[in-house]
Structure formats: C-alpha cells, structure tokens
Image (tube, rainbow, N blue to C red; front, top):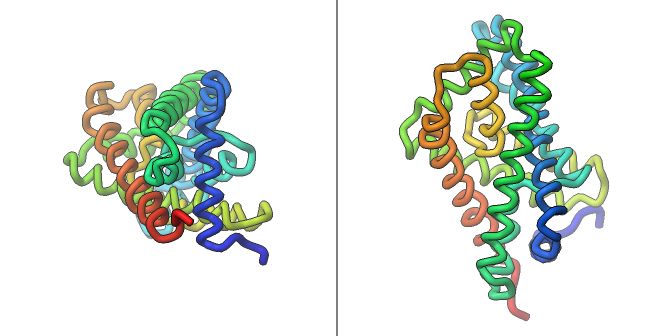
Length: 261
C-alpha cells in the first residue's frame, strides 16, 4: 500500500517517541529551536497574506480567515519534512510508550520541557532577528494586523482559551499523525496541510505559534505585558494543547491500536 494503516501509524509513532528520548540534550534543544523558528516563519507568512488583506476581511471575513490558515501550515511542513521538534506534536507521540509502561514518565516530562523551552527560544529568535530588526511587519496593514491578533488572543477568559487550545492541538497532532501514514513528500504535505489549515482558520490557540504572534505584537507597540501574555494566553493554551494531543490523539489511539501482543 502507499500508506501505513492506522495501527502501523501508532507503532511508528511509538518508535519515534523512543528516538526523541534518546537524543542528547544539545541536539534535542537544537531540533526544538528549529521547530519554534519554523512555526514562526509560517506565522509571518500568515500575517502578510491574511493580515495584509483588510479589504477582503471587511467584505468576506471567512475568505480572509481561510487565507490566513491556508499559508500557516508551512511551519509544520518544515518540521516534519526538514526535521525539527515541536512540543505540541510531542504531546501525542510521547504519551504512547508511557501509557504502555515502556517508558518512565520522567522521560516524557524531559522531552516536553526541553521541546517547549527550545520552541520558545526559536520563536523569540525569529521575533527579534527576523521581524523586529528587519521591520518586515512594521508597515501597515501588517503592524495593525499583528497587534489585533495579539490583543484578541489575550482578551479571552481562561477556559475559552483552554478549549481553543484543545481543538488546536487535537488537529495539529492529527496532522503529524496522518503525515506518518504517507510514504512520500507530497502525501505528507497534504496530510499536514488540511488539519493545520482547519485549526488556524477556526482561530484556535497553538501555544508555540503564540510564542511568536504575541511577542511580535509587543515589539510593534501592543499594550500587552509579559505577565498578560503568559497568564491570559500561554498557560491556558499550553494546558489545552496538552489535553488535545495527549488525550484525544495519544491516549485514544494507544487504547485502540497499541496492544500488548
């Protein structure tokens, strides 16, 4: 067959979890740095294409949301195809061997922590060196779009952001999971594009993308403090991402497909 079956995907994902846990700290941090940077690149593109179309947003907001979501997946495509690590997909993958008692929970927490930290550094690197110092998002309408996105993301109550985080990573992990099924680059790109486009068009909350979106807006003058960013968005979005990936993808598919025989 041209693809792996759902059961084969689950076992491939479990093998990937062991590979991730075996990396040295320095190599894994570099992979995580790249993951955060790649997602930030997709975020920049989304702002330029979607945020740079205010007339379309006014006349047809659904089309503008789709344009924003349609180009954002370049980040996860680079993560999967070029090779990098992303905390949000680790939420599903690292869960499998832990649930099967083949890996200690401490190794899962180590991978999650290093990935999250490395992703954050990668995203902030792009914020400062690629966007702030070059000024590519400073002209209008990109600056206003950047600030509006960040204000919207930090203006919701805790559980609204949490559940939007659940939805985001449910779809992101399904994208990464589905990409495992494909045996060629075209298949992997298509498997990634549809779910990621969907969550971004819906306006869900992806913690790693927000590590770019909100600090970027702060450099452009958004009235958002680091405390507001972390408390109002990053914490609930991250917790939602963990539940969306670990429970709705990792746990459910482990129960269905990864048996002890």
